Length: 435
Image (cartoon, rainbow, N blue to C red):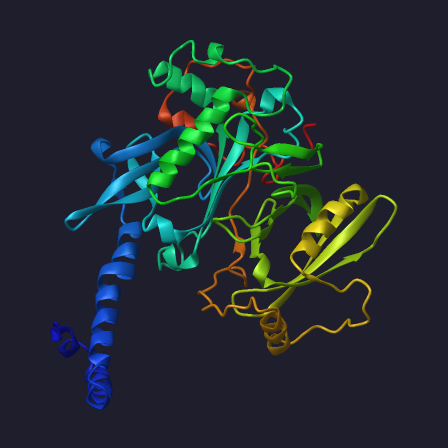
C-alpha cells in the first residue's frame, strides 16, 4: 500500500494523519482508499468534463444529429454518446457536440451515477394535434457533483426538442431504415399516440442510452411496444399511465408562478427514479424530489381555478414556499390524488400559518422518515440547487410539423438559433400567443 502521497501533504495535515494512524493502524487503509478515490474518480471526472474535445468518429456509439437544444445552449447541436479513453479503459460519455467542427461543448461521464433524471416528455398543447404527435422533449438532469467545479460553468439540464418524423426520414436517407419500413404498419392518421415507427425509434434510443448506463423513462403515448395511454389529454392538461398501470405516471397542467406562465409536472416514482414535482417556464426550471416536499395547501379557490402552495426544503435545508396559481379546477382531483398518494401534509384547513424554522422543517421531514441531509453546493444567482436557469423554448416551427417536407439540411452554421429568431414560449408547452 503506497503512502508516498502523505509526504506531499502540508506538514500540519501530515501530523494529523500520523496521529490518527498511531492510535489506530487500520485507519491508514481508509486514508489510502480515500486518496485513491479522489485521485482516480472525482478529480479525473471533472477534468474530463471541462476539457474541449474533438470527438473521433470511431469512438461514437450513438448520435442524434442536429437537433434543437433549448438548454444548456440555444442552437442546433448533436447529442452524442461516445467513448473516452481513461487510462487503459474506455468509458461512455454524453456530449453536446458542435456539428460544424465535431468539438464537444459539454461532456458528462460516469453516466450511471451522474444522471438524476432522464425522460422523453410530451409538449403540452401539441398532444391534441395528430400532426405533432412525433414532437417531444428529451430531458436530462444531472446531480450537482457531476458538473464542472468552475463557478461560471452552466448547471442547466439538457433539454432538446426531437421530431421523430424528421429522425425517421434521416434514418431512411442514411440507409438505417428501409424505405418501405413505414408501410409495414397501419396507424390511423388522426391518432394522437405515437405510430409504430416513432415508437420503435424511441425504443432504439432507450436501448442505446441504457448500454451507456442511462435509463430513459418514456412518458410518450404508445400502445405497440409500450403500454402508455392518456387518461386525460387536453390543451391545458394531460395525464398519462405507463406499463398498463391505473395510477397516472405523469400529470402536466398549465399554471402560473407569479406573472410567469408555465407547466407544472408531477412525475410518479418508478423502478429508476423517485417522484418529482417540476415546474418549467422561461427561467428557471424548478425540480424538487418528493422527499423534499414538506406540505401542500390550496388557496384562492374559485369556481374555475385554484392555487397550489407547496413548502419545500432546498439544498441548504432552508424552507421555501412556492405558489402555483390559476390552475383549472377541473384538475383538482388529479393533483390532489398525487399529493395524497405521497402522504404530503395538506395544511389547507389548519390554523398553523407561521413559517417553520430550518430546524423545525428538518424535524418534520425526519418524522416522515424521508429526510436525507445533503451538502449544499456553491450557488450562483439563485438560492436553490433546484433552480436550473437558462432554459427557454420555442413553439414547434415548420421544421417540426409532420406535414412539412424538407430535404435540405443546409450549412451547420444555419442551425444556430438566435434569441431574436425564437418565439417567446415556455418550457414543455406550446406557445399560447400563437394558438
